[in-house]
Amino acid sequence: MEIEKNAAVTLSYKVLDDAGKLMEESSEPLVYLHGGYGNTFTKIEEALQDQTAGCKTTLQLASADAFGERDESLVQTIPKSQFRLGVTDVRAASEEEIAHGHGRGEHGYHH
Image (cartoon, rainbow, N blue to C red; front, top):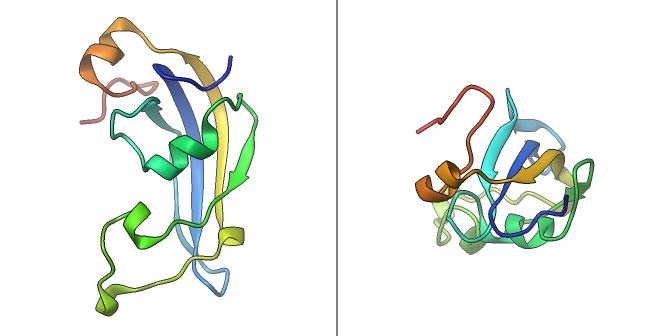
């Protein structure tokens, strides 16, 4: 199945700093509802649109595309080569997920 609006997408991710040091890694698969529900960054949805389970991509997100406007006291640049995504599953979202506006993980909703 292709990733499109109302697809429940399960993915894992890693975020590395400029030196390649791991800053964050998903400890369990993350599930989000694709299609503009605000469950993940817009640039991630754009990169995954029309992809399928098993795809992998690397992204570089500008501050405005991720956590907000630039605050010089908090700036860390993460090169494109150090931001990885791996889609592990794609399925049609349930009516309940659509009504809630976000995907449901293997162990229920994580509000």
